[in-house]
Image (cartoon, rainbow, N blue to C red):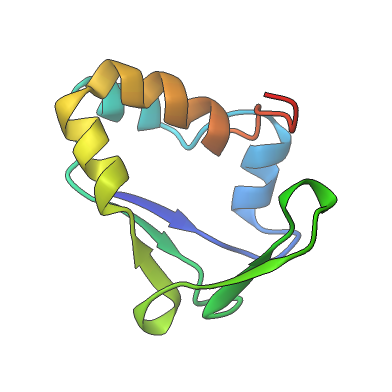
Length: 101
């Protein structure tokens, strides 16, 4: 299971993102086909997020029961195409994707 957990501005996850690296072991787990569930636990901060896509307005998104969202489509992608899932998800989760990509 891959659990992405939101934290405050000084949290451990923020430091990982600043360093441009994905969570430890993520790449190997994805490539090895060992990911059975991908969830995002945002409950520490809120049960919803406000997303501003490239400065064009804003969208409020609810995150499911108690601020936890299951990414079933991403889990299925990881199950069916582990190499492709790793090459797509690892850069995103490491914060290495820019707005122009």
